[in-house]
Image 1 (cartoon, helix red, strand yellow):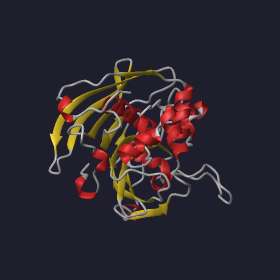
Image 2 (cartoon, rainbow over the protein chains, first blue to last red; image 1 turned 180 degrees about the horizontal axis):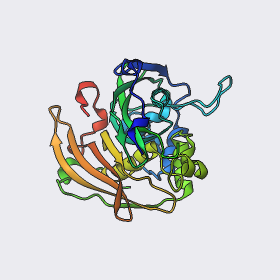
Image 3 (cartoon, each protein chain N blue to C red; image 1 turned 90 degrees about the vertical axis):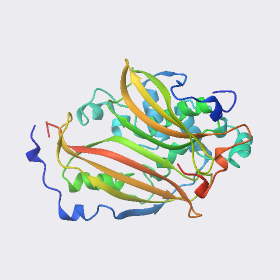
Length: 175
Length: 159
């Protein structure tokens, strides 16, 4: 396993650092069904998400768990007219391609939560590459770490949160 | 689920959260991936996970990891607990067959300039006594029974 297999970072990739990309809006309705699925998956019995009266008293209406921030920007696996697999966090997949690193994992995640997401909200997002590391030799193979921020605001222009991913793109020894 | 809401006066540095134990199955992993709308195959396709990711099985995905942490923290705080920030580092994946143990310790209790009471937490997911994911979280809790962190907006909310 050597780092010499990993090419230099192209100038056009450096130029993307700090630039907002993929500005988009949620393309499906934010609804309690998604919240119920998430709470059921982790057996979260918080009455905020199951009892509308509790939600009214505490949060003045039904909201989503804050950690669902990324869920609202993950497209349907398929939709009419779409070609190929639709991907969330497109910037991450762009970096895999541009840096010629075929495999990748998310190694860390930081989230900051602002206004809660309410049912029926229309959210806007953009993705920003914050950094790309030098070549690192990892247990999975040689590669680079990168950090991508996903910033979110709601239809009222209020800050909803930032979802920041640290990812490792790498080449497995067999590749 | 706790019966009431924790207030800042009830929290001390060094306090441990009640542990949460969950035996992970393939269903746990797939439920979590689909609920978080993560369709990537390493979270539902064992062959892909083994041959492309070089791991032994499908594994819990990042947003579901976050959802487990959130559930663990809000079980302790009650519904008025409001997450401000969460940062976690995944060291090793969690697979079907693993017994996942969530544990947590209070690292800080502070009040900010707006009067919001914050609790800092070190939280972890461990399997076989080895930490697989470590997490630092910041959660707002009521100062007293009349306070509600969810009422804070704009510059009154400084996560």
